[in-house]
Image 1 (cartoon, rainbow, N blue to C red):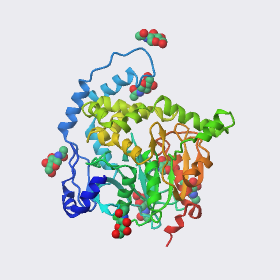
Image 2 (cartoon, rainbow, N blue to C red; image 1 turned 30 degrees about the vertical axis):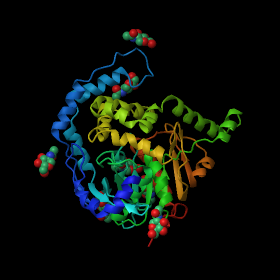
Image 3 (cartoon, rainbow, N blue to C red; image 1 turned 135 degrees about the horizontal axis):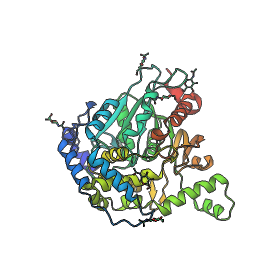
Image 4 (spheres, rainbow, N blue to C red; image 1 turned 60 degrees about the vertical axis):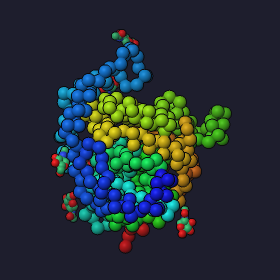
Length: 431
Ligand SMILES: *[C@@H]1O[C@H](CO)[C@@H](O)[C@H](O)[C@H]1NC(C)=O
Ligand SMILES: *[C@@H]1O[C@H](CO)[C@@H](O)[C@H](O)[C@H]1NC(C)=O
Ligand SMILES: *[C@@H]1O[C@H](CO)[C@@H](O)[C@H](O)[C@H]1NC(C)=O
Ligand SMILES: *[C@@H]1O[C@H](CO)[C@@H](O)[C@H](O)[C@H]1NC(C)=O
Ligand SMILES: *[C@@H]1O[C@H](CO)[C@@H](O)[C@H](O)[C@H]1NC(C)=O
Ligand SMILES: *[C@@H]1O[C@H](CO)[C@@H](O)[C@H](O)[C@H]1NC(C)=O
Ligand SMILES: *[C@@H]1O[C@H](CO)[C@@H](O)[C@H](O)[C@H]1NC(C)=O
């Protein structure tokens, strides 16, 4: 992005005029400098081409064992469902019916330069006069679809004693229907600039943020960069890498039960199954070559992560969900979403195998922890190393995709935190 900044500085008007030229492969979409209603319309020929590729997918020679990746049964069940039953038209119609979607172009100012960022986003306004603008940010391997189970209750809560929200749920560029960046440099810091600009364009000068995964990462840049705009945040992925001293205490057997539980989770993640993250944050193009033409491979790549971070007592992903989630990458091509990992690394959010140091957040923050997620049981004192964390809620059920998997638990956390006008600071919205 640094070279693009220079270019944009000299040729700003030229680039702005080109805003209408943004497009997404295989999708009818236009992007102009103000929000325009958007319906997903994927080229039917592409959908049939995808189905044919799945029908011709070549199976590995399976060993009778577990632990190498999604099972042989998964290969067969997802393939057969995709070839024989999956109905993209019905899925597309369902999403278009459920979500009010828009496209736009924003022009964030970064280091005195600007460049256009085309975005796809969901925007549902509440009809409650006291509603608070809320930015919901998804992560990988999710999408804007994750907000679907909470958006109704956020905009139209059951009664006036819980807060209502105007909900904005953008697709990170490279995910869903936001075009992938055309130059390197667009990571969570630039996403924070773009999403703040989106909220301003929608007339929300002040707002709150909720996010998990990269949403939980991006919100830390955004609250750090825009403390006048981001009044408060609730993160269900507030990660802090244990430090050398913490590991020393742990090795000496003097860590608290919460510290032990958290370190064990992080160690298992880093040492046993973060390989996907290492490849995506080092050579995303290498893996993208394999996935761009291989819809079933792409789906199982994503499912491998989806499967590990949900509560097995609550969630058993169906082939239909696996396919639809993977389509949010496959339709435009998965490279942009994958290489966001590299930009997180470049922005400091990852430090090779470990998590990096994210910007300090001074605005009030609440964190929610779920047992099948990486941040489960991290002590409040550790969380406070990253900023002004005032509340920690530890749940007994659920995992990484809280909004999708345990919507009622996350809704209660959202209502309880942002409903506390003093502690969360949302009294700023009372006029
Ligand atoms: C895309 O838009 C063009 C022009 O409006 C239209 O002819 C075409 O049918 C659309 N394609 C899909 C898949 O809706
Ligand atoms: C696979 O392994 C399990 C036990 O590990 C065994 O019960 C089963 O018979 C094996 N199946 C085949 C086809 O070898
Ligand atoms: C994937 O395989 C695992 C292990 O065999 C199984 O528990 C799970 O239900 C499968 N899921 C799908 C969608 O096939
Ligand atoms: C931005 O412009 C202002 C005023 O011209 C200048 O003081 C500042 O150093 C510039 N910042 C950067 C990052 O270039
Ligand atoms: C607000 O909108 C909901 C539907 O989203 C509707 O049921 C409700 O009656 C509306 N309330 C008011 C006060 O208009
Ligand atoms: C809204 O919340 C209520 C209670 O928390 C729940 O019963 C209902 O299913 C939710 N509605 C939606 C659309 O999520
Ligand atoms: C309002 O709704 C919330 C969330 O469902 C519930 O916890 C609370 O008891 C309700 N309050 C009243 C007064 O009905």
